[in-house]
Image 1 (cartoon, one colour):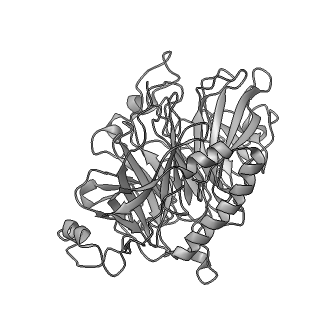
Image 2 (tube, rainbow, N blue to C red):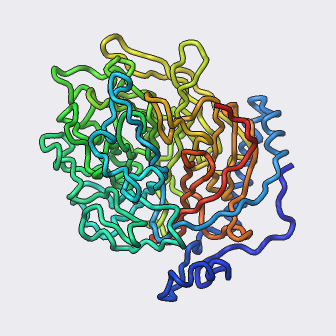
Image 3 (tube, rainbow, N blue to C red):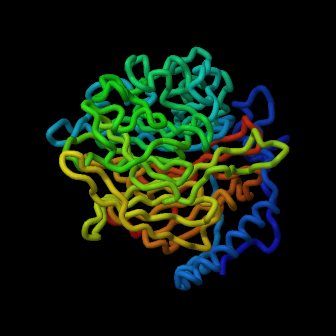
Amino acid sequence: MIMYHTTPKPRVTVGNWQPRSVVARTAAYLASKRPAWLLVMSLTNARKFILSLSGMMALTTGIAALGCEAAWQAAEAQEIRSINARVIAFNIPGASAISQVGTFLNVPPPGACANPIPSKFPTYIQPGAVLDPNRILVGSRSNFGAPLAIGAGAEGSFLSIDPSAPGILRVPPDFAQSGTQSSALGGAVQMFSANSPHWHNAVNNFGANTAPYAGVSNPLGLSNNNAFGRIWPANAPFGDSGLGSSSILDPTGLPLAGAPNPLIGGVYVGNLTNRDIVTTPPQPQVIPGSLSAGAVGTALLGPSPDGSCRAVFAVVTADGAIVQEHTAKGLDGLAPAGTIRPLLGRSFDYTYQHAFQAVEPRLGVLMNPYVSIPGIVRQLFVSEPFDNTIAVINLVVAGTAPNLVFGPGSVRRIYSHALNFPVDLAAVHRDAENVNWASNTTLDNGSDFYVANRGNNTIVRMRQDGSVVAIRRVTLDDEELDDVSLNGITTSTDGTTIYVTFTGPRRGHGGVLALPAFGAPEFAR
């Protein structure tokens, strides 16, 4: 059965104090002697126990009904060992989606659809630059001082952080007051993009339907098109029940310049960028859909099946729908509301006393292009945090030429006792080489994936069939994390490092941890 400590270990609660080893490492940096409160008062252990217990009861019924006794027993057999993390950065409010930038492939057409970043923005991918391949992009619900774009949703930004910087990075709360790609801490922290007028879609696309919107606002998802494109955030600018948005960002942090469709530019919002609105002459949507709820996760699907070599991304919305976005033809639906277990009306860490501080719910999305099922061209793995499940959606090609799109096939679910508020997913080995779909959200051929469990701060390594390889409980200096919860996960392009985001109960609380990869070395290229 799953092993737990019989005697509770001391827990890391970095509020008014820090473990001595952390203090020793950071005393020189924190010259002000202010408490770092890296991991500060959050939910009680009772809450975590209740969530775990309720999840266990629900899954007992579900697994029995589906005849998944073998999967249950395999998960129970896994001993939960500890894995020590190091703190990279803190003071990142609502730290959410995270990705190592990765290398943007430099294969010009016709060998690939495009190579825009290496060919047009080479200085932005140099060592130390904002899209240095080794840096990590981290979503936050703060603008870090950048002026807020009026009427375009909540604050939000993506920071570019150097994970190899010495010491622990305490992100200054107002370092981006200039409203541009500012930097702090000797360049270790840089602003990539925020919900601020400098990054309006109108700057590059004055006539776009979404000209007043920026590309980032309360970001909850992130997929990098390392194959032939750019950075694609997914946002809930008006909360989970308001209109969602998704964007295509140049290395400048601005929405796409020279966009193939001037009515879209680089930002999709609500139904303003649906196919039937942005095509000339108007074309009906092949599959109905819109960003009618907050966008809570996203993944690159690769080139469109219509043969245009335009990128298509899948975006999951809080109502459980999935839409697809074509850079030239706009937005079509992919799967209807309720396909994914909805997040609407729910929140992480909600209390009546501090409702405004609740963390916006999000989920993880991974794409598998290496499918051997006849007729299936892609698979999506989508975590369902409040149900302790992972949905696996098979995709087919739908429509008629020249307007072919991705369509929904069958849906199955992974049930496992090892899942406890599975907030995010990451490829153990991300596809970094394929010119059609290299991305942080693309599984390499045969790769396992990691699951970040918000409910008990564990990480599960899981095979694509749902069987559990290993489980690790995240610790700091051999002490369990207390009063914070995992909120995002990604891996380095070489597969050796896991990066996770965490959040706490107060608005300024959040940060990034790094820990070593783990599990059986079963992957072979």
